[in-house]
Picture 1: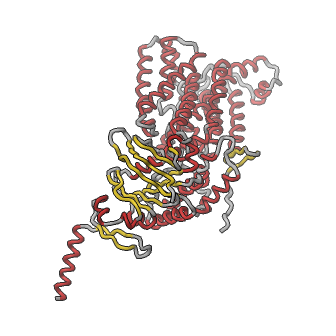
Picture 2 (picture 1 turned 90 degrees about the vertical axis):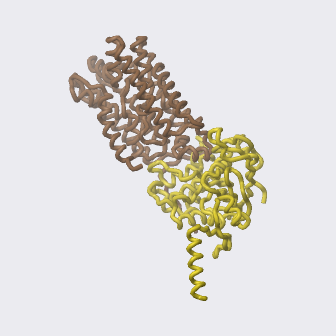
Picture 3 (picture 1 turned 180 degrees about the horizontal axis):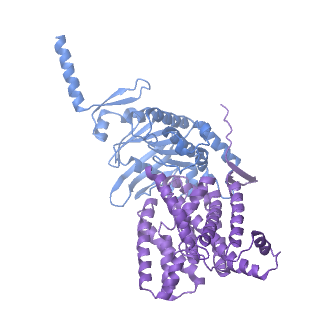
Length: 278
Length: 349
């Protein structure tokens, strides 16, 4: 698969003192789902911001199809690369339809505010995200899962090849989390490249083609989930003792974390059983 | 599955490659506001010590009644001040609409943000120290408000401008500037101070056609500018990151919009002093009527703000007639409770 988005020697900082992301190289394959994982403060969200021009690099650059994104026209870039920030908030009273319509902004001008094409694309985005019946409802009256779908629908209406999402499942109930991830997988099957920051390792392993594990602003491991999700890597990245088993449904690696006290108790129980038997 | 057609709430105009959309609620609201505005205007012109019936007012305005006294009262005394009331209401309301949009805060208003304090400070300084003729006041207040806005922007800047910092810095600077204004009043020459004081309370008393002429050109430039920026304002309303993701140059657009908003507040301060709370209340009521899309919100807010101040002016002349209150006191009496109501609504957010 060809590379579509590439970071080279990328360093990112918010205040010029503390470097959050250190001289990092990353290639995103076209048509893939990439999950950025790592402990809190590892720089995964910052990296996502750097990949999307929300943050200017201190060193290095980010190229979209071999073009430096910081030299591209803002609207042009917005037609190719969409970003969904973490838990965005819609203004009071804005309806789902109006929100999704905003996604058409980079394709419009003052003279062309609402073409027939805009309308079709917004209808389609609402249909894909299953929100057609909520179109006239204010965004702030929806449940968390529906609200997140509405924002994804907005990003869809932007019709970009690449979609970057910062923790799209945070604050959602588990059922809604899967709902959103299934939707993203569906979009990926239609040819979109997806890069997202995910908190949950098992979900990342289930849905991603490539996992990128970060610690201290650097990549510790990257590749297929089976390569990244190893006890050794988890110890390196999260400082976590864990066993890796197979996800019974998808056969992807699944992490079962160990906690010291529980292990002790389990071992003691084991011992008692052995004693009884013998 | 066949996608179900969504009936949307817009009226869409398409001619060839050109297309324009506006919320369906906008046109009826605009029409209603125009009708109410005309009723208030005619009532206001006819009301006063010298009674003229509304019918005579209309006849005089359209030149059907040849009565020199009517003409003097209608054309020279009452109409210009009422038009000034309308225009400053429109200016303040649009100024507040823009500020609320770019700060994403329903409580933002040129008064609360300290912009009008900067304008007032400049104007009081000009009146008390330099005795500058009122024709030049718009420039003075604009300079004062712009410097103030630039200071707010600069002090709130931290690798980018955030709306909450803008508001907090604005409130702080506003308080400091008001203190300096009061200091000038305390130490100024009594005659100039008197003049400055009446003007500070926000009054349209004795405003004539010169005042009208001094603000019309500003409004003719600034209001279309605001309407042209409506789409950008809509995206800014979704947050900085989302707007950037949509290809908006956030800092540039916010800068332009802030300048338009500041200029609108400044011209209203220049002709009528501090008329408070209009920039807060009018956009809010309008948003309830036409929704949050700025294409329709800005023109509707302009009309509603104008009608509101015209109405407040009528009240201010009626309450303690034959004497009159400064209109700023009436808008504060309407606006302050509304502000508290808004705070009450926002208590859990």
